[in-house]
Image 1: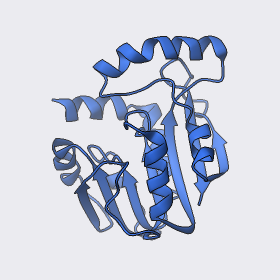
Image 2 (image 1 turned 60 degrees about the horizontal axis):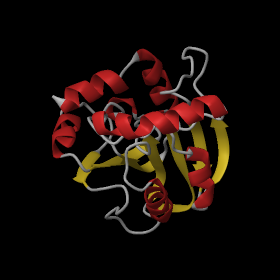
Image 3 (image 1 turned 45 degrees about the vertical axis):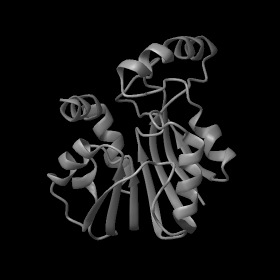
Image 4 (image 1 turned 120 degrees about the vertical axis):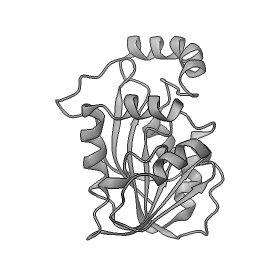
Length: 196
């Protein structure tokens, strides 16, 4: 049931627009951290992407991802974001879409992403997190303890941009959702590109 629910929540039209924009920039050997049920799998461009490795800690979600049609070679591995089972510098692109909110240690996950990226490699991300509006961020902080217990460890109040910089990424582009989606206490967006 959880894989189907996750598909519904993370597959809305507004979110799909951001996913497509993000995945369109992927190139070379790609790692998707938190591939989940594989909503991004059909979006990879075989003219730009050599292959995709997707990791997730959930076997049921990986089974659902395996059912998706991919135009590029796809390998799925059960692993957590904080301990990626890959050599340093293996990937040209690492992707996070709605993953950093639910990992146990976002800084450790980002350090691992940086480790497995080649020098100059890109991290593409579409995440939600702490609002810069103090009133909204206070509500996010108050709601997160309850929210994470009913939503698969999803935190509303993580500072995505701050975590990227803290672990050594250089943020090249950072913006929010486009006009099709109004930000709120659940959906303040961090969308962009960071470079190793």
